[in-house]
Length: 93
Image (tube, rainbow, N blue to C red; front, side, top):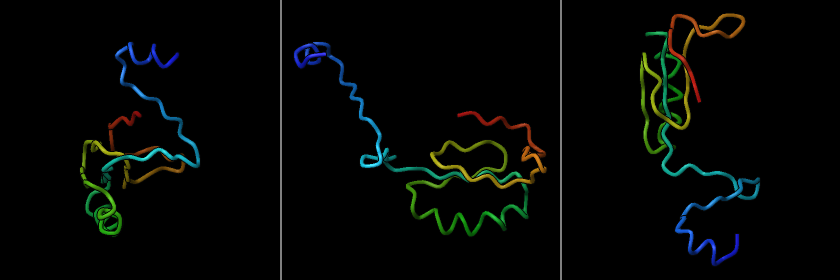
């Protein structure tokens, strides 16, 4: 698409290719902590929250619903096949 076509199309969408030299950067990222393990999970997640929380714009925590975030930490029991136990939550991208 030529310069004039772009100018007259009214589109302001810009595509920038992500590369090693130009990595994708999230502006004001949010970190989320989903604790499905109860009190013992709080003990495990607390050091991560304290150590990493200050690096993010927002910190969101939940014990049931997946918090809306850019980076998610999940604390749960798992089986040998890494299935999440004791939850009916569905994880989708």
